[in-house]
Length: 136
Image (tube, rainbow, N blue to C red; front, side, top):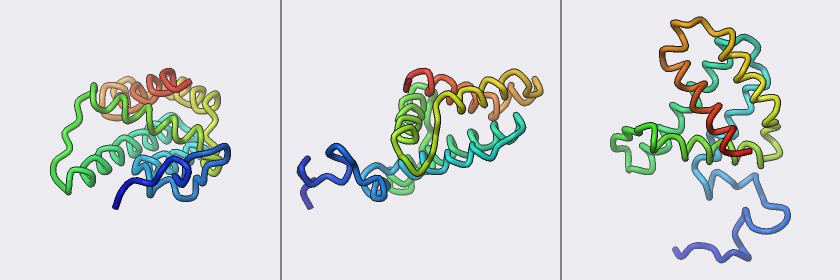
């Protein structure tokens, strides 16, 4: 079916219908999941939430690719992570506050064990930190 016109698009207008965001922007599912950051307390918990979010970004790419492989290089992942962060900032039910999340990311960077910062967790923290910087 043809794409909805701007007037009938669920995210168009002054008060977008964010309840239907996942239908329009698949990465909105991942943005909604970032709301879990509110309950992350330790640097490892913050890193785990961010790592899972980046894994979900790859899952969405795989789904959009018809179930095929989704090998994302950093150049591919960064704009998608930034899109996901931007969506989380706009979605009222996510309660994603850029300042608070940046504080959590900086906290995790500062107090994360060095060996963890050299693995996926550290990569996730760095990517989301950069995405937050790009989005705000």
